[in-house]
Amino acid sequence: MKSETKIWLDYAEENLKSSKILLDNKLYNPSLQNTQQSVEKALKAIVVEYGINLKRTHDILELKYLLQRKDIIVNISDDECDLLNAIYLPSKYPMLGNHL
Image 1 (cartoon, rainbow, N blue to C red):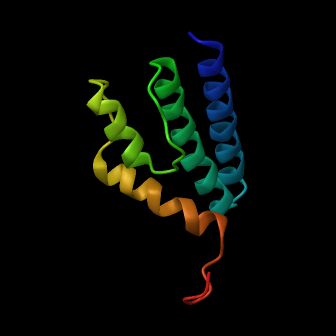
Image 2: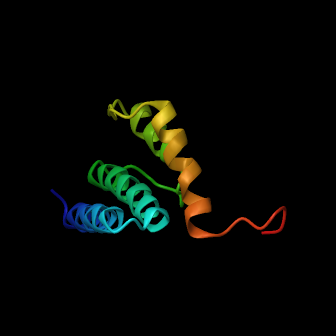
């Protein structure tokens, strides 16, 4: 395993652990944010490990398709990716009507 891959996986694991702690304490918004970040970082670890060029993105579905184009199967459904994508912005920033 590449050292950079390990760093991504360590961060992914930290996000996952944080998510569980936050969930146990009924802090749902930051728990969701950390869950999304954990998945995103784990997928980016795979991208790094296989030496795939990666543009800056937080889109889980885009990462899944990038890996699939390289014949790397990611066992996350498109609906699950969409759900994780739906979590990203609302969990980071409050939605104030139409003003962002």
